[in-house]
Amino acid sequence: MDNKFDFSKDSRLNAILNNIVGDVRGYSDSIAQQIKRLSEIGIALSSERNLNKLLEMIVDEAMEFTNSDGGTLYILKDNKLHFEIIRNISLDIQMGGTLKKKVGFPALELDRSNVSAYAAIEKRSVNIPDVYETQEFDFTGPKKFDEQAGYRSKSMLVVPLMNYEDEVIGVLQLINAMDMESGAVIEFSDEFVELTQSLASQAAISITNVKLIDDIENLFESFIKVMATAIDERTPYNVNHTRRVVSFALELAKEVNRCDEGVYKDVSFSDDELNELRIAAWMHDVGKVTTPEWVMDKSTKLQTIFDRIDFVTQRFINIKKDFIIKSQEEKIKLLTKGSDVALQELARIDAQLAAFIKEIDADLEAVTKANQPGEFMQDADIARIKEIAAKKYIDHNGDEQPYLTENELENLTIRKGSITDDERKIMQGHATVTMKMLNKIPFIKKLQHVPIYAGEHHECLNGSGYPLGLKGGEIPIQARIMAIADFYEALTARDRPYKKALPIDVALNIVSKVVEGKCLDKDLYDLFINEKVYIKGDDRIEEAAAVTEH
Image (tube, rainbow, N blue to C red; front, side, top):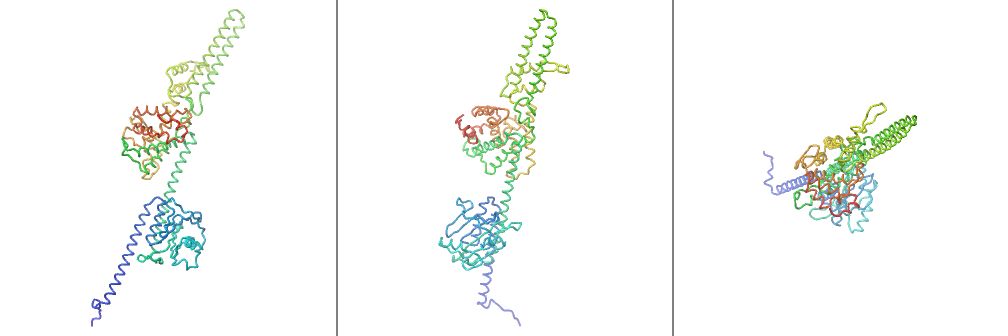
């Protein structure tokens, strides 16, 4: 006998079965959609790097996910729950996040009578069907708010946000779950509790990641400032120089972004690219940490660790004293004779001594003058120093010595500035060192060009620059921008130990001549002049504002 029952022959049972299958399939589809949506939310959260936007997304997505009327997000700081985001659809309330209207409520103490604080302390979710009917927590505040706003808080779901170390970093509070069809306020279902907990976990990871990235960026910013401080400790002018180069470079880059004609009309720097340029500008002189201080701070031509003009001065004084002593000794010999001839010789010796003193004082004056750096040393002045250097004197060992050593002569005949060719090579070496140092840093992708821009800011379009001798298009526009910013700031710097600051109009004339020599980018220089970047980027605004046109 066959005991199998044929459901297809019983229409009533068949209908019930179909309904059950339909309900199961519907529930399964609903759960699948929710899981899919939860996955999409997780991806969206993980890709957001702006903390305020991220916090907004967490609340907005949680409200939409659970069909809630309101949501609040707290962040745990200093052992208190701080309001970050408040949303309520019925009351049209939007506070915090990227909005100008910030949350002004005081932070909550971690008191167990407060449901959000309780969730944070116990690290567990709380699902309340009706806040007016529970005695477990103090809802005096929400009830007072309801009375004033004409609202009715009912169902509430509170979920702690915990990071990978199982530490609570915040609390998500949702209010009044709404029935999808009727719109009536209902209790948060168990499946929504579990899915919201999963969302909270993803949100906590995203918040932690964003904060970690912010911490790393802040650490890197601190590293930059430490490096600038290290250079500042070695040479007081450089930190001001660096800050102003950053300012000039960013202003010029922004003007490139505004171009709607010319060579750079199709060039536009993104925020990340502007930040990359900013970092490169801050670090463009980092290689100077290895440059000897006496080269960087060489305020006179004879300066090394100290100004050797003091040695030269003492040498000339000694030469003069020796001549005076010899003259006195010669006069003593003549006086013992007591003749008319001796008297005439005495007069000759006095005249010779006076002439020598006048000559050596004039020589010392010329040497002292030549020791001061200038924009250009005349041929006649160089010949004068060479003439002095060729003179001889007898030292205390009886050996013949020149008035000036070869090294002193080399330094004193420097035509422009205060450093020799060899010292200039040492100075230029900072660009190579900068590239080497920065290439050792594992920059993230959006900062990968920092070593290139920082290390190539002394390259010239005509190939005469350093350290690589690049030409034309081989030099990236960011390095060209920094070249103009660096050169102009160096000309107008008021705190350089080896020169006085040039007036702005004189400095701009010099820059224009360098542009004509095919060293600096003419199109960028035109922007620098026409858009008055030399004023906009200068923190010495009183001085800069005095020049209105070039």
